[in-house]
Amino acid sequence: MKTIINKLFIYSLLLLTFFLSAACSDWNEPKPVDLNINSAKKQNPELWARYMQVLHTYKQSKHYLAYAHFNNSPEKPVNEGSYLRSLPDSLDIVTLGNSSKISDYDREDIQLLQEKSIRVLYFVDYAAHAATFTDVMALGTWLDKAITVATELELDGFAFTGIPFYSGTDTELAAHKEKSRLIVSKLSAAVGQNKLLILEGNPAFVADTDLDKLNYIVLNTADLTNVTDLKLQVAGILANGLLPKDKLLLAARTGGQIINEASMKQNAVILMTDRVVSLGPLGGLSIYDIGKDYYSPIMNYELTRSAIQLMNPSK
Image (tube, rainbow, N blue to C red; front, top):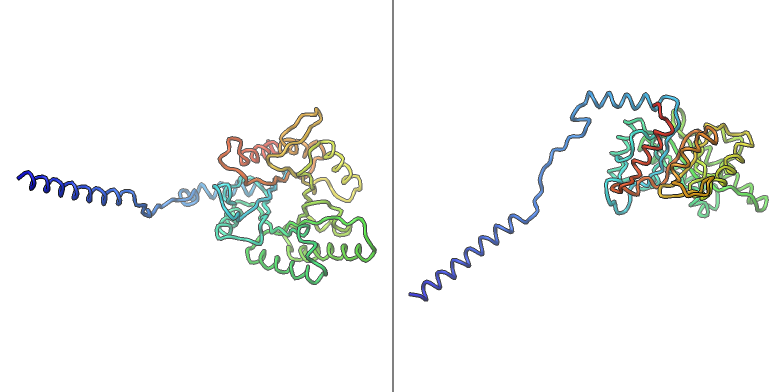
């Protein structure tokens, strides 16, 4: 009898273990869940429309510009800060650092930014690729491809880079000038009316006769480490009288530091924000590496919003 009872007890334990295992397996197995998350626009279309109108009115008003260079489509997005949709609404211009790699997320976010009256630009990084263009035909083909993509995405213009050429043979100098003129000629023709053409870098790259085709110039101040160098650079550019102050934007890199007049290290974005007014007043501020963090207690998002508010306190 004991043997039968023992066997029944063992069988019961086995059955119980089986059912518990099956149940636990069901509990622990991840299952897709349909979540209906409504955006702010869908939750209250009327309030959203009013907010869009406020943004549009602000962007159309006279104010110091806020420009961001954003590295879109990262190979390994780490958080929400990797996406265009997370940028501050009060930005005026965003240049896509990886314009040749546009993801499906980027396509959606570009439309969202434009709805918020943020101008989104295609980035033509000629400085990084100049050595690969041995002749103007190759450069022209490259530019045509960029223009095609920007047109398909309905972007709001172009930002481009270039390195001035100060020494070399007459032939080399002529070739350099020809490439510079080609870049400005093709891109300015492509932007047409109501779009932007911006140089990121030294204005000496562009011929004096082409400077009026540029809407703004983002000066290459992002990696300066001393405020004295900043003052000398801005003073030198303004001294030639070819560029109006309101065409110039100072550049700062998030996480950077600059030694100020008191020989103290200061946050680069904060220092540059102040110098936009004191060294000009200039046209505004450009921020690089804006998408590098999101959950940090001192977020680039908040830093950018503070910079915009400091430049435009009454807006």
